[in-house]
Structures are given as structure tokens and as C-alpha cells.
Length: 207
Image (cartoon, rainbow, N blue to C red; front, side):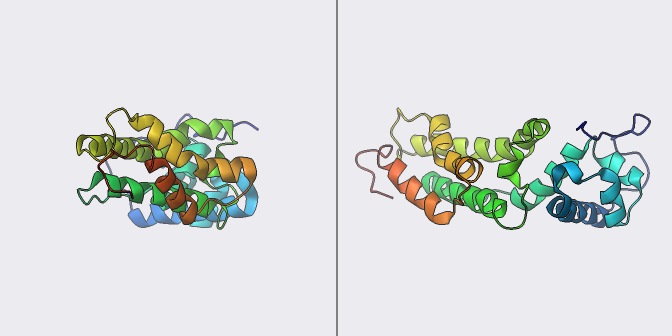
């Protein structure tokens, strides 16, 4: 099915008129999530979302260039934290970010939305947007924490930060997508402890 896109005569850039109403944006995102749950990704249309949200179609088209972007934005608003809180202990913060990743991705994939983030990876047209909107911010933050943990002397200097983060987070997507199983907080913590056994400096207490 061809991806639904914004009509050519409409511009996705905000105009110089009144600022966007946050309440409308929230209504659109909520309508998107509801219809995604009811109709699935392919059954959902931007027109349906506009009707459910009680807004004009042009309001939708001004905010998003395509259905894929609208869907990803609605989901990311629910699962991506607006801010990453830090304590100063990079290793503890990394553990927290990994736990959040599992709770927000794997948890939601098996509860509220059949087409939640993990399942969206099956949709080719969504992969790019999914990575830019959801995966990249959390992955970059986790990698920065791993690098900081090395600088703080908590992790061995030969640990590859990128590989470490990928190893810690991959099961959150692998289990629901490949095995159709839920990966929860217990999985995240058990994996973190196991992986850290091979990454901590010799004089660093076990996590």
C-alpha cells in the first residue's frame, strides 16, 4: 500500500500566524494511538485521525508530511522521555536508561498497541523515522553514559561503548519481534548484571 503523504499544495512548515495549540497536538496523537489500535497501521488514514481528533485535515497536514511521521510522533511522545535524568554516577544512570528502554518499548508492545515500536520495525516505510525519532536519542544517550563510565574508572578501558549499549538493549526488541515474548524489567536488570561481569574494572564492586 502506498504511503499516505501530505498534499503537495500544503506546507509542513509552521506559518507566521497563531502558534500551534498544544491541546490540538495532544488530541491528534491520542486519536492516532486509538485508531492504530483499532485499525492497524495500514487501515489508519490521516483523514480518520483528523475526524477522531476533531480537527481540520489541514491541521494534520501542516504538522506531518506523512502518515508514518504522524504515527511515529504519536508513539514516541508516549515512550521517549523528554529529559534524561542523571545522578552523576554514569554506571547507575546507564542501568536506569536500559531499564527505561525495556519498560517503554517492550512493555507497550505487549499491552496497549499491537503496532507499538517493536512491531513497527516490520514496516519498511517506518524504519527510518523510527530510528531518528526513537532509537537514536536513547542510543546516543546510553552510549555517552557508557563512555563516561569508562572515564570514571567504573568500566574497563577496552570496553566498546556502542557494542555494550547494543548488547544491553537488543533483547528488548528481539524478544517481542522474533520470539513474540515480552521483555520486561527483570530481563533488563538480569542482563545488565550479567554483562557487567565482563565489563567492570577489576577493583570495581559488582553491580
